[in-house]
Image 1 (cartoon, each protein chain N blue to C red):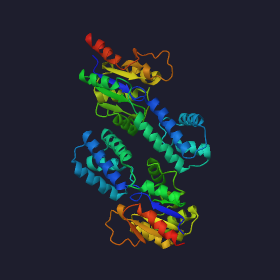
Image 2 (image 1 turned 135 degrees about the vertical axis):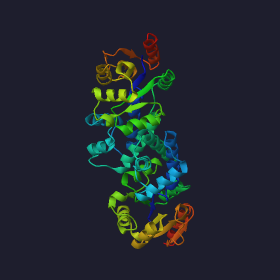
Image 3 (image 1 turned 60 degrees about the horizontal axis):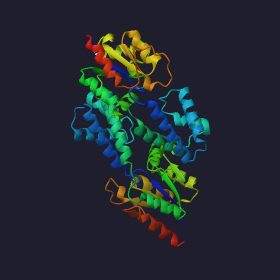
Image 4 (image 1 turned 90 degrees about the vertical axis):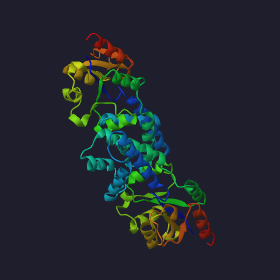
Length: 228
Length: 228
């Protein structure tokens, strides 16, 4: 009997990379407009390389970019970039199609909902609040809650405990096979690979199910529960 | 001969307190909606009291508010507040009427423009960028540039140096008599009190001029320069 459905956040519920690309592009255009001398494509490429060096949540990325690029921080240029980034981020923080409908439907079916995210706690929560999902989940486990990232069993066990369900009663949905799927399988959860959010071109996710659209989740739950 | 016009930022160019009030109100409503048990008016009052204890730029105000109020931080509530605050801030970060026109007109008249703000550097610059003024000023001196607040002569001397004008060739416009007017007068600048931004009910600003509308600035500059 499936009693809970747990989701990864970025690239599973939220179209995170689309937001990131849009926001960085708008930031670069604004910095060029404010006086930065660089080709737009070159700058975008360099910023994503800098993200790789630290992490995609780096909050000081434009400071670092300007320092590497120009040897100092011109605050006129930095501020123009940050403001444009924020505006584009707010406008592009969007859920994949059908996500909101599916979550509501799962609630109607009596399931509990959870999130496991490797993002910092405040970032994960503000993203949920930005898309108006912050009241929907019974458990949200972020990086700060366990201090260990997926595929380590810790965050999976933490969410199961908070939801008060056994591993075999819970589905884990995620776009990152090595982290979301591998980790959830190890603790005994049913796994669903969110192919629509996959950015690696994963060949074999190893998941029990693979979906191209969040809608398919409803049928999976129905089928798993009708034989109980 | 007046060659430059220097402005205080918050409550002189930007209607800062209006933004702050709107943003805090929206944040409180969102936190209540997310589960915080408190009366709206009570919460707003408490938050502004907390601002007084630290400073109006306090970036952790809702963390502190929730800790004082509930003994811990519920991130669902915090995130709801922060997201609502940001949205209201972006929507309400506005210039006083006529500010944009006056700045453009002063540029046309050949004057250099400056800003002196006691706000942190990044906040001052992002506010300018949010209202699209970041390319207008020849000199922007923030708290981080001198480490000393108005009315200390340091920031006034710094802006004059950067603008390359003598004190008597520059006008200082500000809403805070004890800081903007007193400090500018001490170094020998012409002073204009922005009565429209005054939140203290100042009786005697001590300024050379007092204005109810930024538009009046143009006439003041014209008159000062026609006798040269």
